[in-house]
Image 1 (cartoon, rainbow over the protein chains, first blue to last red):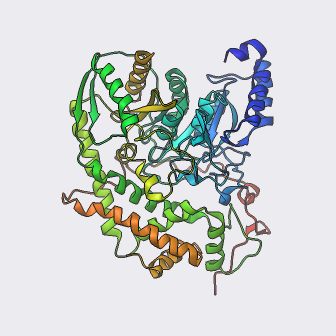
Image 2: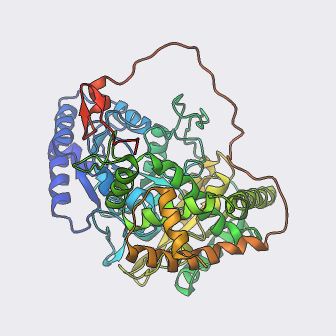
Image 3: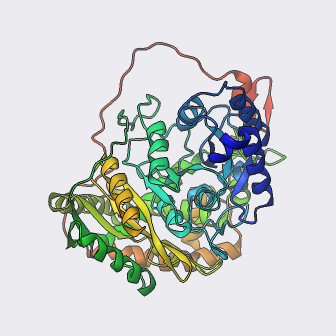
Amino acid sequence: MEIVEEHGCYDAVSGLIEKIEKSRLNAYITVCKEDALKLAEKYDRGELKGRLAGIPVAVKDNITTKGVKTTCASKMLSNYEPVFDAHVVERLKAEGAIIIGKTNMDEFAMGTTTETSYYGVVRNPHDLERVAGGSSGGSAAVIAADEAVLALGSDTGGSIRCPASFCGVYGLKPTYGLVSRYGLIPYANSLEQIGPMADSIEDLALLLEVIAGKDARDSTNAGREFRFVQERRKLRVGVIKEMGGNDDVLGRFDEVVGELSRIHEVGEVSMPSFRYALAAYYIIAMSEASSNLARYDGVRYGFALDKLDSWRRYFSKVRAEGFGEEVKRRIMLGSYALSAGYYGKYYLKAQKVRTLVINDFKKAFEKYDVLISPTMPALPFKIGELADPLTMYKADVNTVPVNLAGLPALNVPVGFIKGLPVGMQVIGRHFSENLLLNFGKEVSELLG
Amino acid sequence: MVSLEEVYHTAELAKIEITGEEAEKFSREFESILDYFNILDEVEEDVEPTFQVLPLRNVFRDDDPGECLSQDDALKNARHKEDGYFKGPRVVE
């Protein structure tokens, strides 16, 4: 933020907005030009106070912002203007942050590449022919391209870590319950968390300190604060055998593991239940989605037809027109998995597998302090490369077990292969964010 | 095999109108996705399901009425409204 000290906040913010308006990344859905400039003026007059005073923050477009369009990158909510702020947005504002805009994403956060967005794909700042990852593709891209200083994403099955990995930035999926979900438009409640994205550990930690904490409006909120404390010690690091990648990714990952083994005690750990984690994750996420997205009836908010009809016809037509293909696919598969005769085979079985995944993690954490893997099994995909849904789902194989167990996990950028970023995933015990951030900082110093 | 009939039935449950073309496509896709989900049939170990990762308990507060949305705010995003009410589709066929 040296630019602010030099030229004042107003010039810095208007320069940033100019840059965003010229950008080819398609990372923002809405830019909050007027509000941002007003706050910048306020900062220059010395009237904006707080730990994030004058800092431009981008917010994923599934997090409600009062009076600012919040679309979930869906036609269904393309005109939705929330009448309240999400809890995390209240906290940003209380600390003087300048919300610069709302970032592009997969529709209702359902996707791994931001290709399901109603507003078009987000391009990867390192290669415009490739995707930025998803579902928080916009939030990761704006950090990588300096179109914001900090960003919020949300992570249901890897939606912060995947784009962070593809764009070469830091992204943290916090422990389930650390950050209030009040005002996060829901997709799969038992899995998702809002989390910070930034290009340094210190920035990431600062943003997490601001957004984490008690909120009575989210009954799954743990009521814990977060404070970043520097610590260094020798750790027991477990490399997860079942989380791999292709030769490009593993080539770099193995080099990093080699570096780490000079400082820490590195071992390998096997998690047999992970063979079933991806299927279990998708069944649970789709089932919860089918129930959550039942609220879009075209009556109280969201896309509506000109003419009211009979309830059954109106409801089905609104949803046919308002939802994109992937959202329809997941709602329908979720309805199928919960329907009579299939509940035991799919949904209940998936929740049992979730227990097995939790048990595997518990066992691993008896022996290790942190667990590591490549965040994504491949380098950023070309736009259009993932032709069918199942191939896309399988790209989440390394990130979904974490959400099933409600654990915290961090993406650490660990260099480039063929000019494209590679990310390492670091997983910790519940509420071990401080350890993860310190470890991430150590890794980044180690790799220079 | 996911029949077209099953796809239409599911669409009806999910309240999403689909075209014949969509039904064909979903039927093919659901086939491969559900086939992949069948991997869960291998799991023999019987454990308790986990629906929620936190040890949740009921959260109570005193019954103090707080602020709530104004009628204008509540209706702000509705397309069809009348006399301070939401106007909904006809429920009785």
